[in-house]
Amino acid sequence: MSIICGLPILECVYCLACARWAWKRCLHTAGHDSENWGLATVEEFEPVPRLCRLILSCYEEDLRNPLWAPPGGYGINPDWVILRKSYEATQGRVPPYMIYLDHDNADISLAIVGLNMVKESDYAVMLDNKLGQRKFDGGYVHNGLLKAAGCVLDAECDVLRELVENYPHYTLTFTGHSLGSGVASLLAMLVVQNRDRLGNIDRKRIRCYAIAPARCMSLNLAVRYADVINSVVLQDDFLPRTATPLEDIFKSLFCLPCILCVRCMKDTCIPEEKMLKDPRRLYAPGRLYHIVERKPFRMGRFPPVVRTAVPVDGRFEHIVLSCNATTDHAIIWIEREAQRALELMLENDRIMEIPVKQRMERQQTLERDHSQEYKAALQRAVTLSVPHAYSPSAYGTFDKHDDRDTSTITSGEGSLSSSTKSRHRESWDELIERLFDKDESGHMVLKEQHADSYL
Picture 1 (spheres, rainbow, N blue to C red):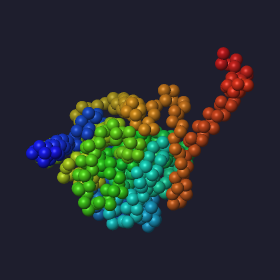
Picture 2 (picture 1 turned 90 degrees about the vertical axis):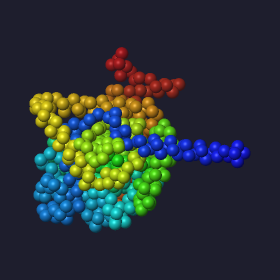
Picture 3 (picture 1 turned 135 degrees about the vertical axis):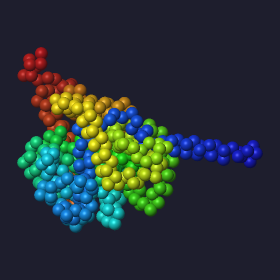
């Protein structure tokens, strides 16, 4: 066509399209992702910098004589460390982790470290996945991370159950960074699905904080477990934003800017409606906390602001072209900016001189608002036709979602199987059999002994 018309029409169209794409991408900043979210409060964000320091302490060989402690120290008591597992102890199936009994904050914490770039076992965990390979609880999850989470639960089930029973008023918190965040998130899901293994622990006592989270679960699961899992993202962090599977990212680790740019161009051309309806596409899990401390076309860092929401669409779908995309993934920077943000929140509270009674009322209001936001997110997922999404029950008695996949998860030490589906089905069948009979035509008829009570 260009030759016939004497004008480079196709070339001009291509150049204009590329210019438009570059203009949109360069103007897109991290602040746009969360500009419509609400601000986080002190009560909900307080654990984040503390848990970041707990993850950092896992890298120390001797906690009594730390070598890389942040300003102010790790803030932990070495005598309260229940156990520590190294690569040798886990045989490389799980990154190193630590169980810490935090009496100051009434919390039982399990912290998992991030990727060690010189450990082949960490790469093996990441590469053990294919798109749509593993179904779990009606959605899709990362296969290698789920198996690693199963290994942790098999190995530490007895220890965690004893701690949960001995300290009935303590919360049970799972946390991790990067690769460890994916393991911690799926471990929290496993515990929720198998609460009987931990003495029938109440779901409200279970929580997870995924620091610089990996995309490890499908959108319906990411929204459904938002009451348990919290993800913390610092400004331009690349990992929660790229839908490229972990295994593909780290296969191309030495050309990471190239693969991020290519993926950025590809995702720009895919409508968001199509992304939402792909059941195999993985997302950052749970409720999101976004720490914003840089502004577009401004130099330096500004006082950090923390925004939070349970988004369904617009859930960190676009990579930010920034020179800080990889540095914002570092746990050291996340801890530093999270601590600064918390100090600013506390300072604002001191200036406002909020009474204790009003603080308690604010905490109750926060829990109510989070519950309403969580239900609204579930409903919006149904409205947007997210695969396998379902709205919360209006009565809270029967679970509408009884057809979810609860397949067995095989780990190195044993197997985990959720029997939720079979329990619901058996109890429902027993109820029908007890109340109804079939007539000659095969229709269900209420039994006579129960008829009077229902009339």
